[in-house]
Image (cartoon, rainbow, N blue to C red; front, side, top):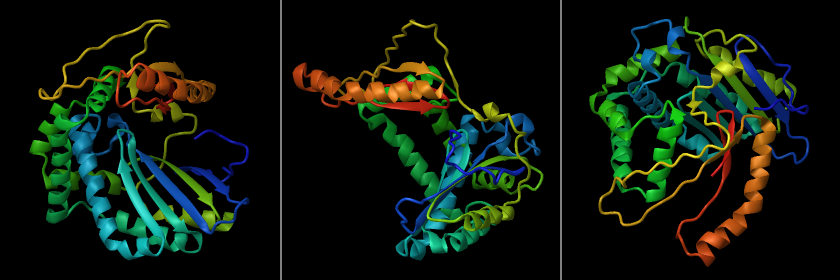
Length: 322
């Protein structure tokens, strides 16, 4: 997150980098709390026997996905009533790490965060039924890849060519075929170790005051892992690397459609614009200016494609226009 003058960041401590902003404009009685923990570098993992020591591999990615899916399954079941009452907890995993988000009515959010974090602390891995559901969902997701739309396949091949790490569907399928519940439970030890160092970042925004925000941060003490990256090492948090092309250099990649029965084609054009915040802002402005005429020309006038879309985003710290 960018450092903005209106963000209160005086909650800095050894374990967490914190961003807080109170809602002083609308007064809606709701708030959001997002916590993200970066996986340690494989060389920094205390217990080298854990499968998480290969977190940068397809096997490690599958373990993280199954752990996250199993945890999400349990939270959904345990806090279904809370969701009906306007409180929600969700979790996700990426190549960078694990994120947990809380949202809902701010007067009960602190109590909700306390209870859910205690549940996460005690989550030592999936039960047999939770593992079976998570594994089945992952296999179904991988099986559906062959029947996705061509534009989704084009985006996939584009990521393989420019991102690292980015895993082939074949490698993920192979890792999924041999994964075990014991391996996922072993992975959970990484997140429950009192000796393992993590870097954590927290965002609190909404109708909460400073004491309440400090109370939410206090609940993080229930998490067992310790420490954080030293200040000034935020660059080390970037887990994805990108192919660096010379300015003005174009690359054309042509791949066969994975589904032999598919008669349609797709083209994805990616323009990397820079690694500064101003580059991202320029990219967003350019995409907004081009969006309507691009669609009108390609879809309406030339009729070159049925699915025509454009977007601007940031991957890691690099801005791009698609």
